[in-house]
Image (tube, rainbow, N blue to C red; front, side, top):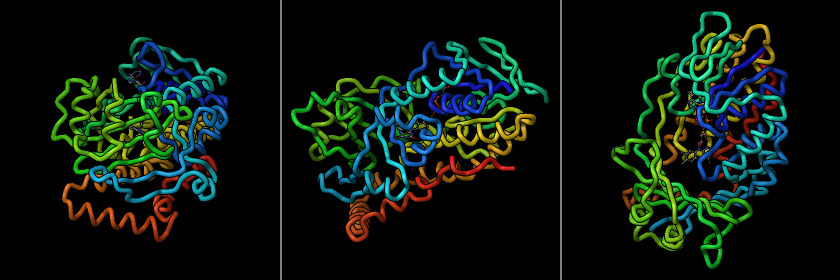
Length: 396
Ligand SMILES: Cc1cc2nc3c(=O)[nH]c(=O)nc-3n(C[C@H](O)[C@H](O)[C@H](O)COP(=O)(O)OP(=O)(O)OC[C@H]3O[C@@H](n4cnc5c(N)ncnc54)[C@H](O)[C@@H]3O)c2cc1C
């Protein structure tokens, strides 16, 4: 069976590796002239680590990952600690696997190396414009024509295949923009924060900071609510003064962190209402192409990794019937990914509460939960982090 994968992002490459490791022929079409990811960090929860482990990438990714001890929530205006969600050893004890922070480029490099080793063909500068499915093998049209037994569109939130094949609408602006910046640790006299992930919460915005590459760089993600996204492009070079202005008046170390930013980019955060179906005949969607979500649960790439594993398991179990394999993939994935998408959309709200009384009450409740039952806050993510798609057998 030969499978065409459209898109060489984290989702597409993971799917290519998983399929090729099961002995299926895989060709990846990536429109960009080189594989690449935005210069930013990525959080990988135990459910994602389980997939990387099953792909044989545990050691390669662990070598470039950091394992934070906790997520610390702080009030951005006062600087006061609000709550602590233990990760580190708590995660390993509770879920059997760690929680990691990685540089996106490092994860993509590990996936690309595994793809090369598994014999995946990667066509760069190859844009797929359309897929024709006439009941037999599918035909890809674009920079290069190709026939394949099945096509997987891992072409991201702006997926052209989703619109053409699954009737999806245009992505919708979620009302949030995100600046992303990497700051070399050498720009700070002393480490500005403990080696945790710290979330500074405030009215209509929040800032996340965590170290990458053994503490050599700090990853900053600053999210601000906006009425509309007026930039022509989905991402644009960010104005660092506008970033500092958005967080003016916040307590230390926020001013110190933002003063050290030299270059940043700003993204409009877009998503798409949950789809009713992702698989049709021999064509299926994967990753952000089918379930783009806000980054507030840090699960978009992790869901794409889970998709990749399940897709490969189900297709390999039905080598003579790719359409049935893709239907089984959709069946196993759609409820969980939709639940995550919905939960991600809700979870940003508590960070951004504008009403001081409501914010105070929410922070008190979080603080009490964190003090009275350490581990309980981590437990709120059990449904998400404990799931191990790798352990489940392919469906009959
Ligand atoms: C601010 C922010 C922070 C985030 N943090 C986290 C986090 O901590 N943890 C986490 O798990 N997730 C996180 N996410 C989500 C995560 O980045 C995405 O869910 C993930 O990268 C999606 O991967 P993908 O492979 O599905 O799509 P993409 O990464 O968008 O890849 C799509 C690829 O397809 C290619 N392509 C598109 N169209 C075509 C075509 N027609 N022909 C050929 N190639 C094509 C593109 O060039 C691209 O390389 C975050 C997102 C944002 C915005």
